Image (cartoon, rainbow over all chains, first blue to last red; front, side):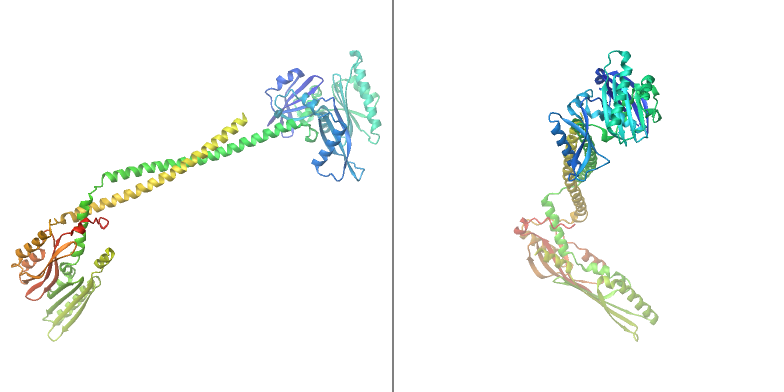
Length: 463
Length: 169
């Protein structure tokens, strides 16, 4: 799960927590308290930093924005213009929220929380690479975030002290309506406690006077004051508010009560909401740049992987084709070496011989005699005529046989017809039969006329 | 560092793109060559088949063509004179020619009863040319008809022509 560092800088000291978030619970893995000068070296190799710093120039104000200005960007530009009017020499960084109660129909009231951007960036200078910063805010918003998480009351005052630093917040419905940060300078260490108590009591009185319509229910003590009974008793004497201690141990594991009070602001830094964060354009720019770079890496990696895939496929195809090419080349060379190449003159002789054979030896009476063999073996022809006149082949064969018994004539006739039918399609022959049943004499004449079509076609092609 | 990584990725991707294109172009070239190999191998096999056929069927029948026209005529006459008495030859049409051969038409007549004699006549070859039985008639007593002697001889014009394409497949 996510591990991160939560750092708060208070009065020259840095309170550092190394935390791990699992679902909704946070576990403290390590805690440290170092001097501000050592912080830069400490943060060098650390990532995921949640930071809160003190700011001297920090102010909140309610501002009217005409109803006509509706979009958030235009409201922000309008407010920026107004703040710049009153603070022309300051680079202002601010957050704004619409107040829940609106009295004017023509204007919308916004509360702005602003600070000097230059001073704020200087305070964050201990971070060598701003892209490591996950969230950044000021001490009062760290305290507000933690208090809102721990306190159920709708109206309360929260006090935080650390050494000589006193931070007082007035909260209405989880929104900050007043804050004051003071550094107490006592004449002697013995009077310090009383000075702090007095400062807090005065601030509470001021808040009560300023916000008479709000009935604060609880006074929440945190930081060193939560561990100091003397100051707490003193404050209780002068206030009618219920006093309670900010006690985050319920949802933050592995930290004791005393330690938690020392790291109140660090714990708050880890919980601060986005609307209460102050991220200068420089940090946002670095973050956006990092996002663009990350997207660039992902996209370029995807393109690279895709190109690798395509190239691998192309290489496989190429490799297959090359192998096939080698195989075909071998086959070709084998065929080439095993094929006898005859000279053109020799081929001409062959061609001439083939032509002559095809032209003059195509038809022969011997072929016809062989084809008529089934009939000739049955009865010798009495007459055989073969003519080849200008490419037209004509054939006339006569058979004659005399029988002693009718049954033999009958059987012969059947056999002759059967053999004739078997070859007549192939030879394209017809027969004319005469049977003299008185003399028992069988006479038949077979004729055929066939054009030398193939030969003629060949001649036509040559012309 | 990250920018370098992106630059390397893009450079590699561009390199791979060109490599891919090169492979595709090579593939087309190799496919063309392979096609040629296949076609040529097939042609060679066909040539081999034809060559075998020529050796088996044609080579033995190759004729020696006479040196001149007169020699061609004399060969025909020599055959006629040799067998004139034996097969009762008569000149039907004296020597004539076309572009490829000289011809002599001969009438023949022989008795039918001697079977061996008949077979001998049928099997009689004209060396250096062809004997064509143009007409063939058998009746009860005789075998008679007409044959043509073909003596291959190319005219000067025909000799110049190379007709290799006509070799049958």
